[in-house]
Image 1 (cartoon, rainbow, N blue to C red):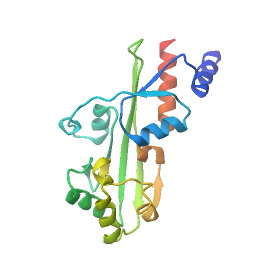
Image 2: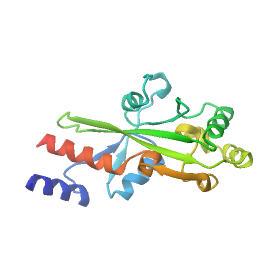
Image 3: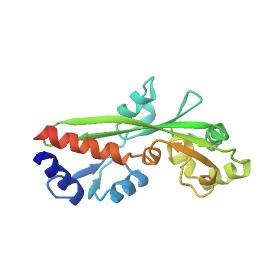
Length: 190
């Protein structure tokens, strides 16, 4: 119990007893870690995520270790390769739903202990008008996010009917899962 209190204190006060390195260039993940109160450094690898393939989305996100994927109509939707593909993705969500599967991997670089898990959230959409889809695509952000659409985008957020699960997962980093894995890793290191 004392160890758990010590770890909780370290996690909530950003104690310098451990440092966090975010292995992602995602602005959303940076924002989430900031909201959680963590100080961190961003270090990214120049890898071709599309060259890493797994049959199951849950295995894919763990293999990518810092990614999320969207699954719609049984198809994995990563970052679109073109505006046409982004349009196809978003039209597929219109009046339907998509699952976002994200992973978190926490590696202790001192002990070598690595803890990881994935989490899923479902997003249900109202019909999204073609003119909204066109505006979002022309803006250009669709090519930089898994599934081609951000939940919080001001043009599309009114068309989100419901989110079942954590919106943090949809944004790219589950707060609860991150806290759990950091805690598990610190406990395993003691």
